[in-house]
Length: 166
Image 1: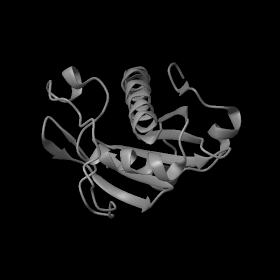
Image 2: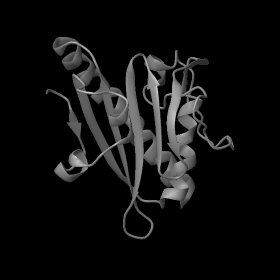
Image 3: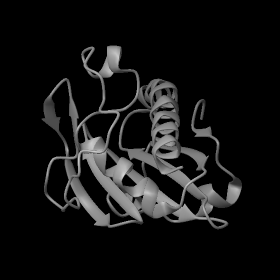
């Protein structure tokens, strides 16, 4: 499908993701990934901050409000709590979490898993998979739109973790 992959290897696509447990036969499957030059324990608090803001293009998906550029000292996420916030409005819910390893939530019918894969000392792969039941044409449109927004989000989280982690 158009826009279904960015920054991921075939092995990263083939691996299981927690979001797979919530949608059988998804019409939309999209994978995104980025290498981050910090250990997983340094990256994890930034992933948990998606509960506060989207971290993509704030002028589009956060009603012009800037996503936090400092860690807020949030407690560990818990299943059932709100997954993210857009323009200060809390949306979605967390459906699975393994602190330091993965955060999975649902929003607007999509399920998203952020997975941290430790690499060499001081490096982490940040993987994101999105799955959804939807029509074929809707899936294509969502895949392309998600590619633009998710790519920006992952790059922003990478930049913030690296800047604060060194």
